[in-house]
Length: 371
Image (cartoon, rainbow, N blue to C red; front, side):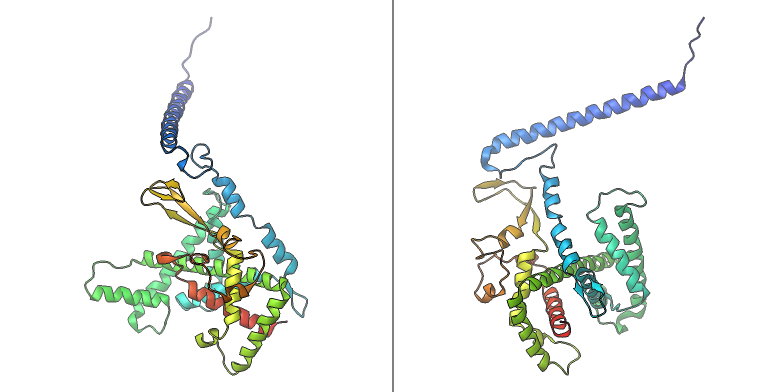
């Protein structure tokens, strides 16, 4: 004779199975409602919306788009094959050296950090954060995303210590940098009786944002600029002649001044042409605040619209022979809204002038010091 025995595990499994089934049904129901709403909206807008696939359920062609944007095989192949060799036979990767230059420049301007272990550790952690920005968001030890999160905590801890030290010193601090100006503005707001003050966390976020935005894009632009010069001997010769002439005038100076940078008309065009062809920031996302119509297409409020900078910079209707590196094209006044390396309007890149200055200084030292 068999005896029926109640197994508590059986009931637990049944319970969880019902929960999972219920959750799946709810999810399917919500997806069906959303897809139906999207379908109704599509029918109401008919063919007026821009062409493209909405995908399933809502990501459209995002994966293919990001894959195309982040493809860097050609770039890294250039760095590998055309990296410079010094007299001792060592190989120098331009991108790596450019990152060091731009990072140190940003840290000096923002925090007055110029050397030491603190700067080295900060650079290493910022590198982890940059890599994590495009990594799959998996919070698991050992992943790129997890390393980035841990690195950000260490960066914030370092910045917090620096801010505390500066606050103790007060306005008498000898540092003349971005952080000191932020703290001074904060103190003035307090003394003037204004309600809003920057918290230390907000100051830390601003500093980190400017470091990341300032070092990566400028270093990439410098690397591309060296590539284009290496492929265009006539441009290189004309640029070098300009820089050697300037070097004779500034031979007794330790540093280049803004007046010196203004005496680099051709170098400025080389910088501009490099930014046009490279389009380091290839697109600018914008949130649609109200329904509108562009070129006959209806754009709905709440959509994210990307301005495709690279397609504008390489449009033969805008630039003659756009795939040719020709700095002299900027001898003539360009068409409005045709050069968008730094954005346009009220959201123009805050670091535009600094990035240009860093690229010009790099060009001068590079061409007058090395063969």
